[in-house]
Length: 313
Image 1: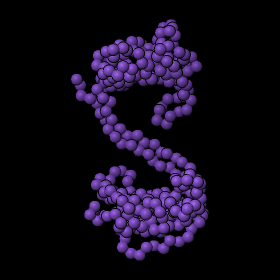
Image 2: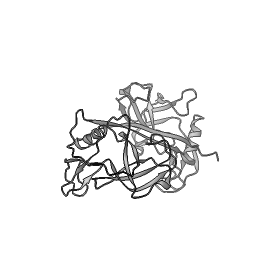
Image 3: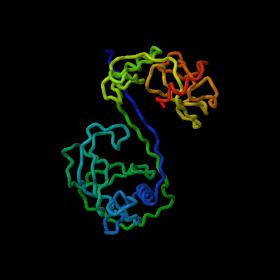
Image 4: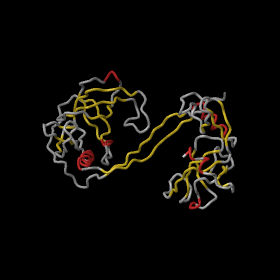
C-alpha cells in the first residue's frame, strides 16, 4: 500500500467584530494606559469586564478602574512561543488578579525561567510602546516587588473610543486524509475516480471514507467509477470569493458519478448557469497538471431519469 499522505495546512481569516459599550471602554482604556473592570450588583469587580453577570445574567454597565499591579493566581510555562504570541522568548502564561479586581486576567509574564514564577508572586503591567485599543496594548506582565499601584476611580469615558476590532484567526496543523482518501487522491492525479465498496450493503462511496457510514464496516475493495455523472442538486453562486478566480454567477453541484452511491461536489461549466438542471449528464474537465477536475461540463447525453438518482439527493 502506498504511503498515507500528509501535509501542513493553515486555516486563517480576519474576524471583524463590533464592540458594545463595556468592551469598547475596556479596550479604549488600554490604549490610554487604564485598566477597567465592571462592577456587579453584589460589589464584585470583574476584569476583563463582561456585559452580563455570569452568575445572575444581569446586564452590567458600571465601569471602575483597577490597579496596574496584581497577584499571579496560577501559571504555566511556555517553552516554545509560537508565531503571534506576546513574546518571542520562553515565557509564562499567567492568570493575574489585578489589585481591586475579583477575577483574573490571562496574559504573558516575562520571566527568566520557570523557577522565577510562582503562584502568589506580585507583577505589574508592562505597556506596549504603540497602543491601538487591543489586549496587546498590554505587552506583558513583569515581576514586581514594589508597592501596590493606586486604584483610581474612572467612569470609562474617553474621546475617540474604539468601536470595533479585527482579530487574525489562524490554525496551523498537519492534515492526513487517511488510507482511503490517500488512494482516492492518488487516483485523481491519474485522472481516475476511485471509491470503496461496503462488504455488506455493497454501496460504493466516493470519496471513500474507509468505512461504510450505514453499516459501520471497514471498506477496502476499490472500485473505479465515472468518469461521467449526473447532477443531483445544485446552487447558483452569486458572491465572488476573494481566493477564486471564477466569475459569478456560476453553479456548484452535487454530482453522482456513474457507479457511485454518494454524490460529490463540483463546479459546472460549459453551459449557461441558468440552464443547469437536475439530471444533467456531465463529465470532468482537467487542466494540464491538475490533480483534480477543474469543473464538469455537459456530455450532450439525454438527461438522466429522476428515478436513477433520487436516492442520492
